Length: 285
Ligand SMILES: Cc1ncc(COP(=O)(O)O)c(C=O)c1O
Image 1 (cartoon, rainbow, N blue to C red):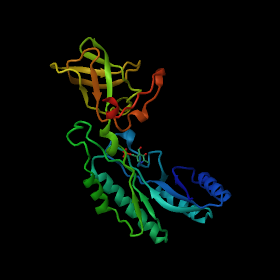
Image 2: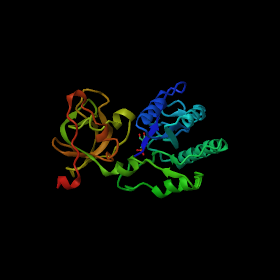
Image 3: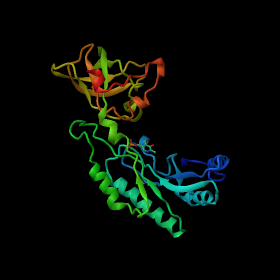
Image 4: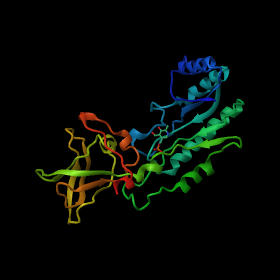
């Protein structure tokens, strides 16, 4: 059995995580395979809160520290350095961002190769975005465009394995948050549709001002505009403002689309609320 670790982020002076892994592996008489998460300092055209690959972001080992960290790992007897890992952000729709990552990985690989350092595994993370505005129009993202970008721009060596960690692109369009209207409130100058679901069930709109398509799946009455909000005592507990919905009444079912990624998994019991229940469509029939 091998021990596999992805070293994420540490203090480069002493590298305690690496020492601990080396000691634990030695104690078990094993060699631990390790990869390093590198911060490639590559930006992504996405929301600032879901960009992860810039030097200003907390993730990964900086490029300037990378050489030293790898050298230390190569000196250790019970760790085997096998891979480099990157992830520049999420909900990325501009293939140019992935091209920039490929170019950076190529640069790093050339430098390491000049020092005769061979890497078996390259992991480029995930990040491919989905169409939140039109979840039905292109439910399956353009994987061909995504993978051919890497095929064209990444200079993979013949002995290397390339890994992807796509999340949202695979599951994002597979789930909806179905919620019931508690109350329709007439405000001073707009109507609020108050749902029984709130930011504790789907936090993306409150956290990143993210857009989710909202549909009234009960009513076929003429369209009206509503601020669609949750029942939690927070002004950020809002799913969408001035949303056109078929006329809403108490008890209507409201679907918040594209909630299959970063939905239930980011739910919390803030305000002592219960966690949402996930069901497959078969279970609902
Ligand atoms: C290291 C890493 N890889 C992959 C992913 C998946 O990203 P996405 O859902 O954008 O494909 C994430 C998401 O946070 C991540 O942190």
